[in-house]
Image (cartoon, rainbow over all chains, first blue to last red; front, side):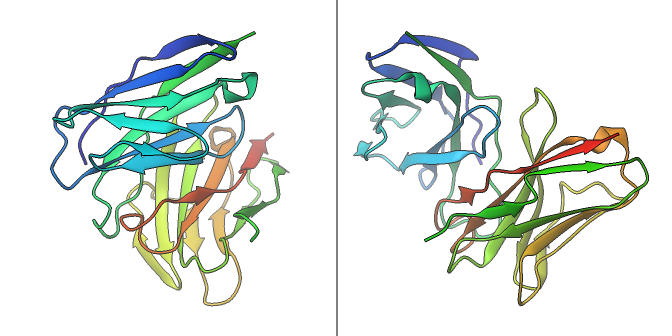
Length: 112
Length: 115
């Protein structure tokens, strides 16, 4: 699986959009971008994943650049409960039996 | 549809005792993954199991740790002769197919404290 680079921490004002970047310059053509988050002391939570088209669900939007070397997770209206560590992971969806590998992620602090 | 259930949520063991952590995957999920998170550190993969089979145990310590996922019942992570360094949060995840095919869902973890 390709490696990812994320800023170690970010702040965001409550009610504003939180934009979390991820670089994955070595991503392969068949690798997807996955995002998970871990709110303090809880189990990781799946957020969204995508290949090359932008994706949106009830939690967030995922914007992937045309060359697929980077992506941005967008939380449109951040709340205090969105304070968490956010992990960007790239992997092949049909790679069979390999586990998710978590890096250090970005610690997002939403500030009132 | 209940999520991934882990129990107990908190477990205290004295040094030298055994710890047994249970994980019931989501309904319809036959793949289970165990992760360990030491205080102030990231999630580290330990072992991946399907029903009755260990698929990948590359993250498991060589001694004292074992895992199983029987045909019936929950997956069990067993730690024998616990030491203080085993104190951590242990998370279980499940998926419908191998992680390549779909997202994984995590339980709330078991926090093991060795005194």
